[in-house]
Image (cartoon, rainbow, N blue to C red; front, side, top):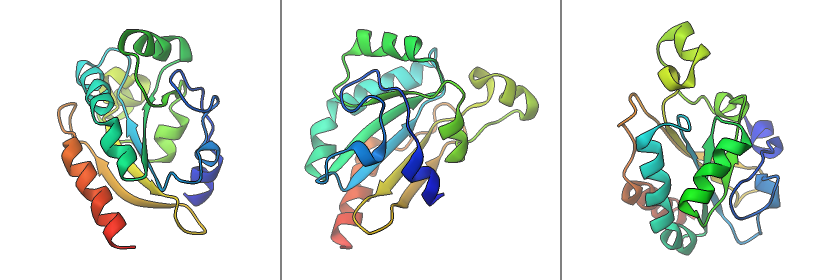
Length: 165
């Protein structure tokens, strides 16, 4: 997975590098927190991206950059940016290639693979940039649309990672 971490590049409808890649972030970003969303219509996803925006300062105080990835075309993702004015990267992954590379959970077998609305579940992946090689330091894979870690829990994971330096 290290090669996938180094090489992915996606269109960014929010602030930050466009196209977005982890390598394009400033050197003072120690962690990248990838929030994999379900789809454009997901109410819980829309609430989560807004909640992340409210906590963006807490992420950045910990040397972390939150990033939301939506398995939709850039035009749809740009609608979220226009509606919510998110202060962090909001990426379009129209073919769900990056979601698949990071094992974003998909339910309902073939039906889930055909439609993200039915099958794709949220996930959170923390990437540690502090060493020579990028590493996945934390992963949360949801079992339902409501199953998401509290942002306070993700921030606590970042604190634990920093304390383990």
